[in-house]
View 1 (spheres, rainbow, N blue to C red):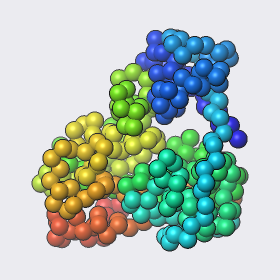
View 2: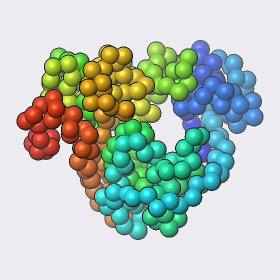
View 3: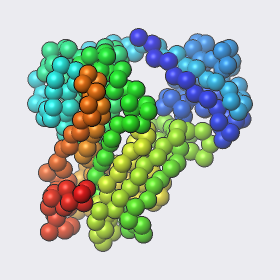
View 4: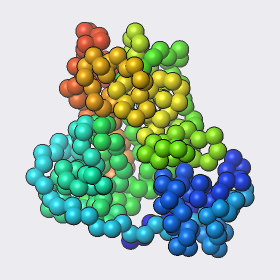
Length: 320
C-alpha cells in the first residue's frame, strides 16, 4: 500500500527548494526526495515540478511514497516483555539496544522479528512486510513502552490518534547540565541535518513542527532527571530538543556532550532515555487505556549511584 504525505508551505518555508522542503518534512534523505520528484511522485498544487522549484506560501505538496521493498524478516523466538495484549493490540516494553524493525544492517534480532514469532504473523499489514504492526517507533537505544497493532483497523485508529496528538507519551531521561526552571517547553521545528543526513536538527527554516514539555524532577550536580511529555512525535525529538539548548541526554552517542562524565563513569553506550508511559483510546472499546514501564535496571543503577536515596517510588509521587 502506497503512503501519501501532504504538506502545506508555511511562511517560513516560502522560497525553499522543493527537494529541501520534502526532505525535512518527510524525514527523507535529499537523494530520496529528489528521486521521488524525478519520478513525478511529488506534486505541487496538483502538478509535477522540478526538484529545484522554489515553494510559495500556501503551496500544497503531495508525495506518493512507494511500497517498501520486502526484507527477509523472519519470525525469531526472542523474549518479549508483554505489558498488555488482546485481539487488536500488543503493548510491549522494549529493552535498550533492540532495533524496532528491520533496516540496513539490522535484518535480524529486531522487535518485528520477535513480534512475528509471538503473534504468529497476526500483525497489521498497513506498513507492509518491513514494519508489520508498527504504528510508532522508539530509538534503538531508548527503552520503554510502545503499542503494536494486530489488525489494520487498530493500526488506522492508533495512527490517527498520533496524528491528532491525542496519545499520551511520557519519557524519563537524565540530561547533562543545570536547569534554571522547574518546568519549560521547547517549541522548535525539526528536520534532517543539512550536512549529516543520519542526524536530525532544529531547523531555522522548514522542518516539522515539534513541541516537548519538560519537568525537572531532580537537579543533581552536573545533571538532572527530567520527565518529558511529547506533544508531537518527531524522529529523535527529545534528544534534539535537549541538545539544542545545550543540555543533551546523558550518554547520547549522536547528540551528546563530548566530555560526558556520566557516560564514562558508568561505561554507558546508549542514551538514558526511557519511554515510561503511553496512553491511547482503545481502537475497539473506545476506552482510554494507559500503560507504564519501570526504569530499566541500568538507568536505576546510574541514578542510585548519583543519588543513594533514589527510588522509583519518587517518580510515582512526583506524578501525583
